[in-house]
Amino acid sequence: MAALGIDFFARDSDVVAVELVGQVLVFEQGGTRLSGMVVETEAYFGSEDPASHAYRGKTPRNGIMFGRAGISYVYLNYGSCYLLNVVTREAGAAGAVLIRALEPLEGIEVMRKGRRESRLEALTSGPGKLTQAFGITKDQNGWDMTGGLLRFEENPVLPDILTIKASRRVGISRGKNLLYRFYVKGNPFVSKK
Image 1 (cartoon, rainbow, N blue to C red):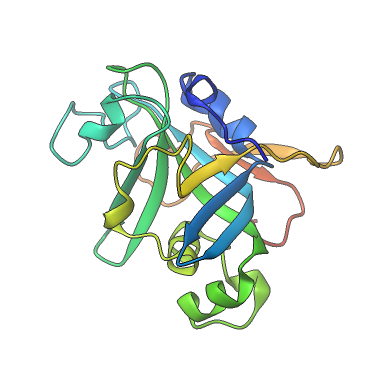
Image 2 (cartoon, rainbow, N blue to C red):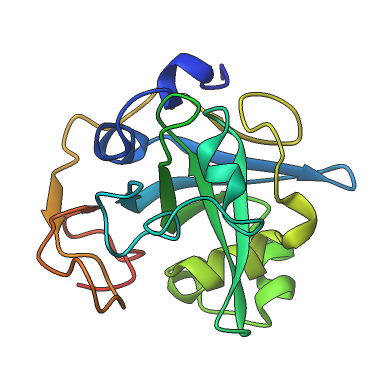
C-alpha cells in the first residue's frame, strides 16, 4: 500500500480528518507490522479553535503543530496516556488531527500484550488505547508520518459502504459545538457512540 504523502496532510484539518477515516495507520517495530483502519478522528486548528493546544500561540509543547504537515504530534494527556496526532495545514498555520480509534488489522497479538486486553473491541477503541496497543510514546513525537516506520497508508479496499458521521469532539470544555469529530457509523471500534 502507498503511504499518504505531504500533499494529503497539507490541507485544512477537518478535510484531512474526514479523509483519514478508512485509511490505515501502520507502525513497524521489532520486525512486526502493526496496523489498523482509522475509524474515528478529530480535527484541531490554531488560534481560531479554543479547544486546540495552539489556541494561545506557539509554545515548546505545541510547536510541532505549526510545522510541516505529515509530522506526528504525540503528547501525554493529563499524565495518563499518550495521544497521537498528525500535523495538518501549511507550515505556520497550526493544525492537527487526533487519531481517536482504529479497527485492528495486523499484529493483533502484540496489541493484546501492549494493552493487557484480550477483547478485540477494546484494543484500539480510544486514543489512549490505540497508542498503548501500538506502543506509541513521546519517543515518536516529531516523526515524519509520510514514510518510515510510523505512517498512514492508502487503503486500497476502502469499503464503499462506510458512512462517515460528524459530531462534537469528545472530552473538551471549549469549542464544544464545533462538529470536528468524524467516525464510521456502526463500527464497533469507535470510542464513543
